[in-house]
Length: 459
Ligand SMILES: [Zn+2]
Image (cartoon, rainbow, N blue to C red; front, side, top):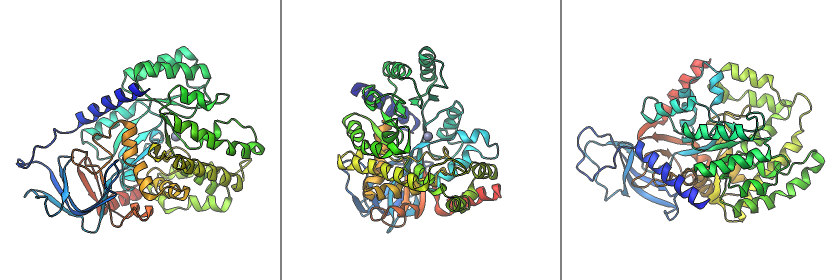
């Protein structure tokens, strides 16, 4: 597993580096280079060994790459640089949402990928990881990488492997080989999945040096099987509860009591855990008629097509036979306890922020990261730990940490500038002064304008 990780890391680093312009040579910048200087800004540390906060720094960005970060007094700003005033503001890497879904766009002709990117960028998200890949994503990523469309870095898994997407072991193996040959970089496990299929997929993935990610294999399969087969990322905190295969609500308490042991097993493995606790929070909020109506009345729904809003309304999850609010609350508390247990075991660097945005009803792509981040603080992480789980740790997982995940020279200029110190209150990540992606700066006014256009389109 270790060597797999290493190879993947090298492959991804080369892949990502290949998308960048050559690193800038020192200061004789030829005319025509796109140079931006963010002046006198407080830089939030996210990488291991980086200071928690470095005050009054000037950050020089050249053609999408951070080329210098230094004390404002000492950094010489090139004459042709565009200046961004960073005084009293806080700069950190753009956020990563490590569990999103863009497939809903395929059935919504009135919403484009670019519209979806607006929702993400407006929330400070400059990297996304789609957890149920499909072939259009290759073209969408090409458009992003060659600058045709402004949007986040796009990573994605293969389509889902589960009982109803493959006909058996041989079919699953063939699909995995085909996906990897066509450029998919990881294999997504969904459930229910047959144990023999899961084991063969894991074996082939190891041979092809691609990570396996997603749901813990279930039902009827011990969690240790998923970990022993080398799953690289468990895609939801809730998996540590559901993998216990209990049938009825009366067994819920016993299952919740078993979660801590699963966290211990996960921490002993190499796997990362993506959080997505906001999903159960949305389920909790939609489990009662009044709160469901409240969710549907959210002003944020203005940024989504009316057809989607109508579908959500029709899907009303509390219509019949659904679990009461109290059960949802108990399940949510268990997921938060899962995160807290990761911290108790000193494994916060294996937590990745993800929302499942664009997947379940009313888990709003982009905006749902606000609640996710707040819930992780509620679970017991410090704002600094949460910020790392949304910046550096995703890069470490993706193997891109040489070029992403912190505000340091040599890294991609994917940045988030906020008005006040987010290390004190995580909600301050929403006080966005501007976002930079691939060196392209979008000030708060431009982000607002993009959102307003989107709302006008869906009016
Ligand atoms: Zn998902």
